[in-house]
Length: 276
Length: 290
Image 1 (tube, rainbow over the protein chains, first blue to last red):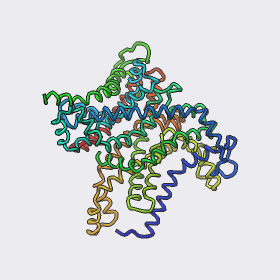
Image 2: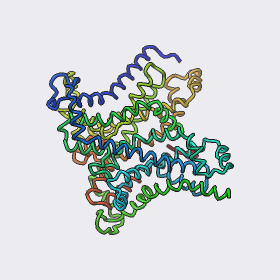
Image 3: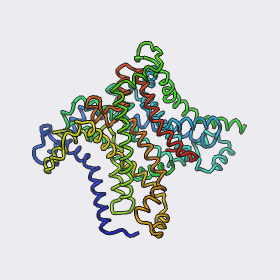
Image 4: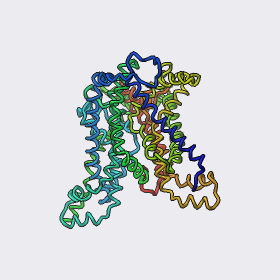
């Protein structure tokens, strides 16, 4: 199918406009973060900042975004590890032992998969308070793991089902238990499943705000969005240069990770969508 | 011996079930009970039947929140799919820099919607925002008024920011769907003399139905529980006009109306159940909806 040349030029032009629209807020954020505090009323050309690099140092100190990033990293790493370990084992059991019990587990998880976390937050709060999990990173990890569990079990079950049963049967002949078979033989070849789970859920856990707003209130336990929200409310729109610098500090690592893995990322998403 | 081992293997799903049961299913069931009480989060809870639900439907603020939530979800789902589908068609065929363009369009979706909301808040601030000053420098002042002062324009801003952020995600799923339609079918339609519009409505669109369904359902469910974007852009204001049900639940919970806030959560749950059940019905017989 040959495309009309004019049409092709128009199409590429349109795409350029779309990309520009997607990038402009990031550009503005950058300009803002490099503006001198005195420059709130934009004298001169607003598209060029005054390159006040000290904003970043001030933002880093005042917002304590560094601690928030460490907390977010711990929560994200803990959640992903726990869901991969438990969800992987569950996916294997469900795919290979299709008993009434496992059918029930699978239906329960998939049935609740689309219920957003906000629905259960209030009763969960009383539970978390009872077990002393409010304002703790481990509490947040357990909670985020539960929210991500259906997605993990779904992905791992789908992938294990696609593997030939002969592999595990051979291992079991050799005297391996189901547990050993999974960890020694099956889990290592499930890397694509693990990758697509991490891709689909990693950023969501890092960016979690709906749960963090309830469960991570104490200052030294806040994750990135919660810290940003407290910081922003505190300055109430007055110190945009500091807010912008904090936002840049918070999103740069996310963008770097995305750019490094963007190929796997887009492929993983595509695969997940087709499988679904 | 073999039988015994089999049984142990089947229980490998137990730890996941316990974690999920304690931190999701138990609170969900507990919430049903709590929604029927007047509990304030501290003292004794008294059974009050459906009083909380009745109170919800008599509360003007809550009714406004339902309206805001539904408008936001319907507007977001419609626009996200139109824009995402448009992007997918634009970016389907190869052109120089296609990979880069896809990454750029997807980029906003990985950033926290809260932070993105603050950035847009700054861009759109009346009088002081960046867009206002940019428009003035470019001589386009007439274009910008106070967007965040009236309900319809504020809702439009909220929906557009949401669409701006997640159009790339919708696009990726449509691109995957388009890729799975073999080009043979589309070319055969071309041979048969179908024009562009006919090829689109009679061939591409029906074959794209699975992707459309995934996108529409996930977009509706996601935007029915909207929280971050509204908190960052309006905090539910002006007044309580753009407050969503999720924000209302949080505020009622902080306001020591614990029983009432769980009742609102149950109502939100029932609202979300409608698109979930429709999607389950539509995918009946297939493996599972995403």
